[in-house]
Length: 302
Image (cartoon, rainbow, N blue to C red; front, side):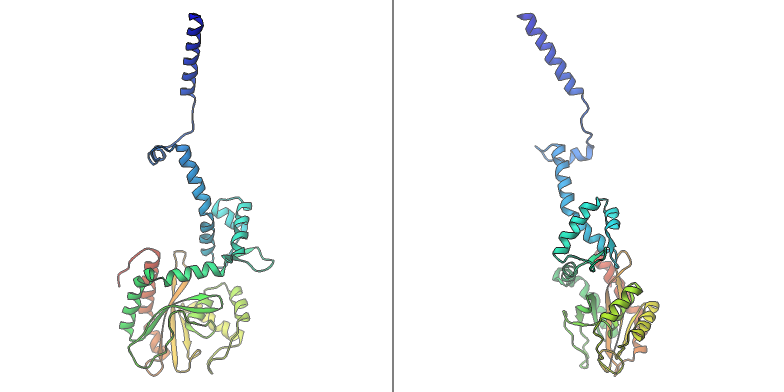
């Protein structure tokens, strides 16, 4: 009996030794140090994997936001390093909720209206607006004219924010106002930043209402003007939206160099001609650069 117990004890010892020397999963010191008390490294790794999957829709929207002309399923899968089948399921779910869209029969996906609206609302939020509004205010003080922060929302220009001149003669368009693309400085600037083929398709689909005698309504003439703006990099409105008012707009670019917004200034021709207003373009471009820095990173110096 004693011999039998001794043999069992030796066997148990060998089993324990084997389990202690058996190689286990490799865990970095960093991962171990971040493990909360009572939680194993395996549990932590599982939680990280779940978190990564949960963030995939946001990563997908971010990838689409970097491509102004849209992106294909293959390109998105390669960029995100996720299987095509998984990306397709995400795209279909987001498309069903209007966060993603595509033309019928097309394989190119772009941001949908709900994603664009979310971005616009974040720019208009008080927590963000109070940071860039001093930049617009300082610009108005320098120029003596009304200045705006605008962006494109579908087939219109949306006024995100605005600081008015103190001059009694002025045009009033409060934040949230929408104006046409084809006859405004910001609108034509946004059109000029699109690939030419997409720009032409959008121009032809617009309701190109004649607002004044100077409004360009024929697609060919409008495309020539847009091409000039593309080369100059400054949007102009020469009494095309409102008689007696001129305006210029310069781009606000994101980290990828895409035009995501514009800083615009308009004035009555009784005070400045379009040629005179264009001499202030470098000052407006400086403000647009500061706005971009602020929105991308943090506070900027005026």
